[in-house]
Image (cartoon, rainbow, N blue to C red; front, side, top):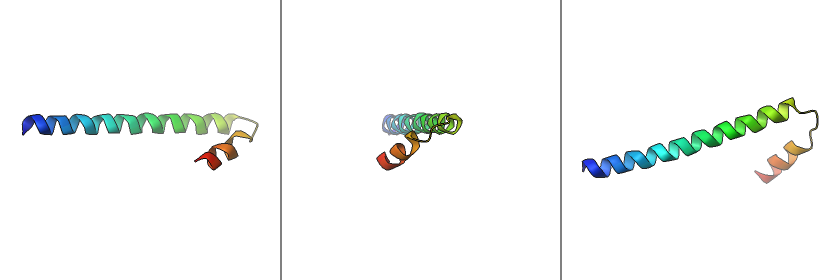
Length: 49
């Protein structure tokens, strides 16, 4: 049981790390867009999402 629990915890950690990385990327994109003068990229991103 300890082995199974450890494996499940490892998978959860990997998912959490992936979500954290995705969140950092999205924040970075939003920050760059807010700094940008052009507003052509954001509607395409919103439409894509």
